[in-house]
Length: 79
Image 1 (cartoon, one colour):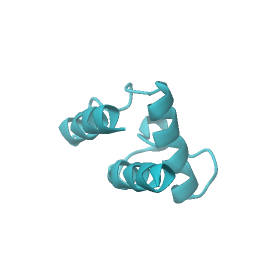
Image 2 (cartoon, rainbow, N blue to C red; image 1 turned 90 degrees about the vertical axis):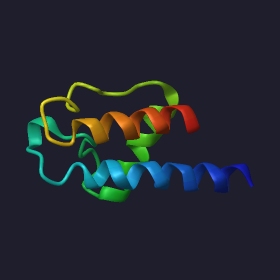
Image 3 (cartoon, one colour; image 1 turned 60 degrees about the horizontal axis):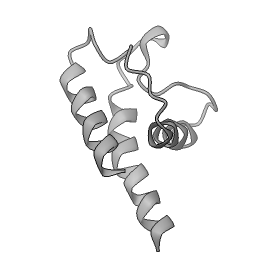
């Protein structure tokens, strides 16, 4: 049951981060393209967030910066 809730939480916060990634160049991606598949990249990004390794450098300087920080803060506290 716990793993189901964890998976739902990862998807719930991962999809908005992937959507915020669409209009960005390769040098300032919110979710890094490690695997080439958006779903795998989303899970890896959220898993790293759970472990405490997060990359905030690419959040600022874009019109969606407030949404990136808000999603990050909610994901940090809830997961």
